[in-house]
Image (cartoon, rainbow, N blue to C red; front, side):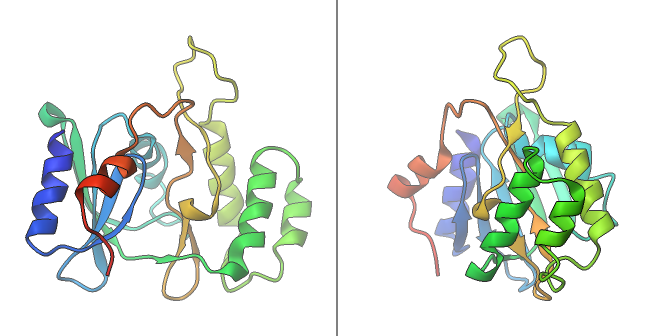
Length: 196
């Protein structure tokens, strides 16, 4: 519960919570263009995204820009300083739906290119997008099997995408576990006051 305590302490000091997920919270910092992401467990699938994809694909415009990352193993939480992003708008919901269909095999690459051609503001480089999507697919598990070493499935919905100020779509959290055992957002709703 150390990550929970860190988040609670930061909010008491005036850091506003911008959003909460199953395993983490995003907090406002004194720098307008940066946020803190505090993860409440090192079992968070986002850490796989960071270690397997973000670190090696910093040049890909569709991954979040991380300024600093630290995992505190003894206390089972992590802290990330990253770029501030903005919620997707209604106009991007069909785009995200098309991406989700591609990820589960219901759209070919050519069909995806056709479906999203009107989203050039959000997709400045289709080749980089396809590279990222395929890398995410290649590192995903496809069946809920207890003996699999990969406990992450594709989780493409509006809440797992955000926008940069220039409207570029960013994949912020593409995976979830097959079964979520401890949802931090439930704790946060009871114990924290958040939002601006």
